[in-house]
Length: 495
Image (cartoon, rainbow, N blue to C red; front, side, top):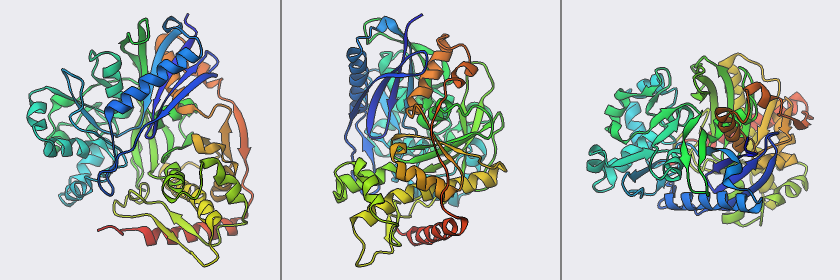
């Protein structure tokens, strides 16, 4: 039996490769950031070739740094930024346009038109998703309509569409495999999560030819092999980053929930084999499918801007030099001084779904300083999570006993303590917080026999720290009520 699983974690701002052993321990990690492209206000793009080159580079780096040969790798698991949309030439593998990133709002008007026509009800019934520019479907339609010659080539079967997982798989297999998994398919706005097939009705409405679309496979299955590392390695697991993190957190039973603090914030609650329809503006999504086992579903709340707000403080406002400064700055004052920051740079996600909300800072006084802005930024991440938790409890009827957390920001003890305070439930940080990559590794390892069962991987989850709520109910309610007032100021700002 080979020694390791290689996880490729392709995120919104960086590509990472992580090597895991049989106990689920992280033996090595390599990471490379790549540029964000902002052609117009509210538009976000990536160069797909930079996504690929950075991902391949870090995979080679982590193997070299750990003196690991391809023959020691049992399988590769892929996890990815979801909804980001790429169309490429089947013959050359070259993209016809930049990747349109999940954050991009260019198709907001197209979504408005679909809602006016009442087609959002069809989309919701088929996909479990709200009609929003966040998802891939309208991005595909935009490329077909706006890039010269693309529609004709797509209809002739010359082009392929995929989310980032599909694009990486295509490149890794040298164009032999055009596939995605059920979790990524469920985020495209084109996939019927109940029938397990692309929706002909939605494809017809958006004028998207079926010839573009990848084959949909289980999240844990052998997709193909790559020869790029010196010997053939099976690619055996794929899942969108949030579903992978949910699996990595071993939220494999109904009612278990996790929140990932990355560029955005994403909370998923496992609902088992039942696709629970949300009455509170959450998404019904596919969690994963393991081989021939029944498809598992989840409720999801998506917050578009979380860690990206801290990045904004660093790169644009330049009031911090790195994210590690935020914790001591936040702790240097007793409270935010009444300052609230609603980071609606690209609109608001769940549970508001306001494409026209914009970033707003309220409560400024002459005494407001850098520390207040930084603290309000961290607090905004916790408040947005509370918005989602309240909606999730209302939808599921389940009481959240504790929240499992992961992602880069969970190392910030101030944020995690404030999260527990504002939720009123314990926040649990696992010993291994790289749960997105770990989930992809588990999916790949289960498909190849590296791990025998989900029970075996569940035994590897270990708690590192619990944050217990420390403020009283009145204080919690007052803080949250003022947050809700701030959100009202941010809504419907752009025209």
